[in-house]
Image (cartoon, rainbow, N blue to C red):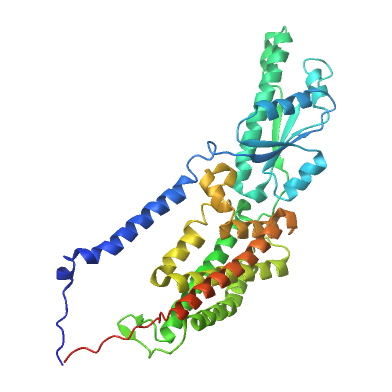
Length: 411
């Protein structure tokens, strides 16, 4: 039997077809990833669209009403000002429905009127409330908007007071008469990564499902003889086991669900038990983590079964590349271009982040995003099953076997 002489790399490098596919795919992936990741973060202020901020007017005079009305009518664009009672604002801060609040105290008009008179004992104060549970950048963005608004109100008030003052020194002191204080409206724990622990924990769950699903996919294909095993210089290939695509997918999905029990538990043990991440509702966090990992893992198996060799690239875009910039976890979706807000309506990381955030920061409240997160996990389960088994059943009915027998080499 004749043995073909081994090819040399230098000769193969001169074949354009060898370069074509990896070059095109690598270039497209690099270009798309660059546009996706950088396109959503470069100018959040210019992309603001209905960022919810509460206005709480407790002032017993008319000045507070004028300030809040002016903000609603003429305030910075892209902000959704919500005029709320103190209890309503506290409730929405505790549910993560507003990114911050501007509070006008009861004695604001009286303290402004007392300026420049013997009755003045303290400076008028406006309070900016932050909400670190919605993410450090989102909370800081809202705080910056509130602080700017409060300073502008102070300058406007000071201009009117200074015009009525006769003493030059009093005019200088009254030019900016309002003190602006900032405090947390809904505090979170010290071991919460400044409001980013929910995002990184969610990323951990998604990566566990994504990597675990692909490991199961590769391991099963290798064990069944449909893929080669190569570790260092050792290469093996098992005899192919006769099995349909549908049964193969069923095997992979069952194994994914079983192994996810281990990976999700270890993730929670490492972050909460060893590293000390602040977390309450531990049984709920555990079952949510497991279901999230399984949902991602089943989605990976369905995509791999449908797309074959490029399935891992497709699932990478679905669960990682498109999901990260549209998660709303680092930069609020209200501060990203419309394309990312569209993706955030269905991309899995957005939904899972809302659920983890509700459990970690907002007392596991259903209206803080937990109900939607559970609904989207269930939807992901169903979509993976329907899409995956629908495609494999179609392939099986068409007689599209996974392994095509190769002709024996000629002697």
